[in-house]
Length: 256
Image (cartoon, rainbow, N blue to C red; front, side, top):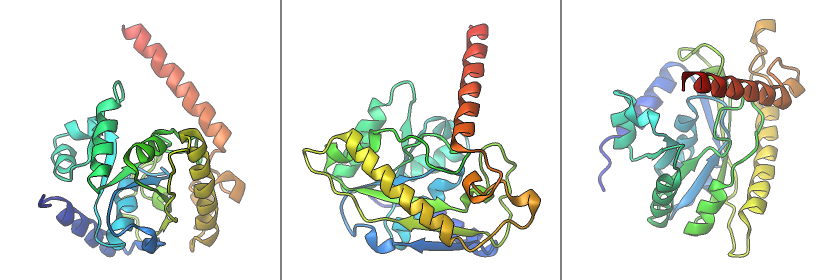
């Protein structure tokens, strides 16, 4: 099928990166399979992560990634036509089975499908708990898992912070790990643990090798707590999310 929307969107993004002098470094592009399906699994620290995660396979061989995203994005008057034109996969959080089936079908047809197993942005910028969907899709389709770590994207636009989409000279790391092949005997829970462990090592490396430091005391928010920054710890972030979820449920109960 001809691609009329995706390539121009990628070229526009690359032009914007160049204009802002975003120093995007793709490490491990050779790990992207040249052909065939793969489940691209990325950490999630920014609203822009799908752009940068998809850049890895594009740099690794002009391969396109079909991301799974909540269906609200597909209903938006601006993003909706673009998402549909790029053949991303809408996910209805009240019934995820149709999206799962569509993803497995795309994988069997040789597509790369992008997944964020943490489901929501990590405010601590560390890895949250992973859902097992990516491992199940890999098992059902016979496609490998392709681990991807992003770092630096949180400086542009993340949860709880104002957008800084015009911030210049920000280094962005896109690190692609070796594909993880599954066997019929592998259990999704164990594979997910293995995947998360591999991505945790990659994240640690990306953080250690990151070429930028905070510009001052007011610029430490994007650095994890264990590295001396003022981002919340994983436990603090989880507690805040639990409190928000409880408040949302209470409001829903009152309105109902």
